Length: 333
Image (tube, rainbow, N blue to C red; front, side, top):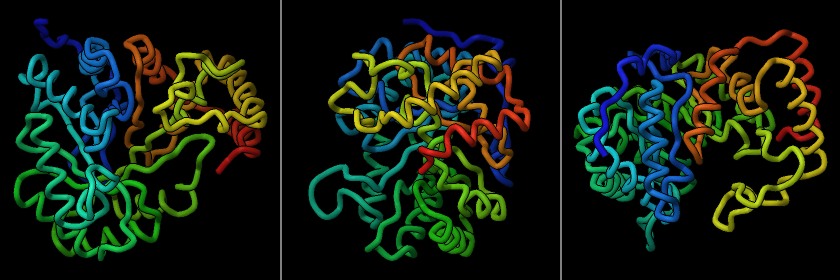
């Protein structure tokens, strides 16, 4: 299909500075963790990507193991980039990661120089690009010296295979140490990608403070708790939901009675705000100035567009925030 991006694509998106860097990211970014693999319908994946770009989303977040099958999300993205989005490459922030299991043997995961260099080379080939804008270490490695992992991130930038580097799933103390090493090497950490949502607030116990102090951006993943913080689970588990899929990360035992009660109450607040539960949950994250962007997934163009309406109402009253805290308290991790 022939594709020409819309002229007004930047008119209705909000952009935030990423820490103390020169990079601005859209308040809502698109993650390709689900719905873009070999098990998914390609035309639907393509339409979501093109609609996202037409609506001002400039940041597309991937990882070497996204699929399923692992690697196929990058292949899907690469195909759309080659066939439709290639003229707009310089308007885009493309990120990838390595650290989780990707191939057999001792070099197929974690944080060795061997793994990170090989993995990024594979990712670049799958996507058909010469560099990524952001390359993350996907999770801390308890065995590999942190210095080796951070020196490798520095090397990758100096080789021109990534413009910036980031961390994901590092706690506050690990982040401090990693950032200190990166600063000494001259390749500062641009951004941190932690799991964060109304039900999962571990980042509030120090990590957000570290990021603010060090001038690092924050881009939460799973902002909707993999779909729990949406209207889909208000009554039961839909047959076509992520929880119902055998290859998904969201399991049925996550849908407890306590969570169902919290979701119902939160949905009532959202309705009074003129929002869906998903929209309010995204706005709740964006209320914090330390949050640069939120990573959403999307299984359809409609779902993507619904989530983008979040930007129409980002303000909360003190009473709303207090009630959200009270409702979510029994199920917060």
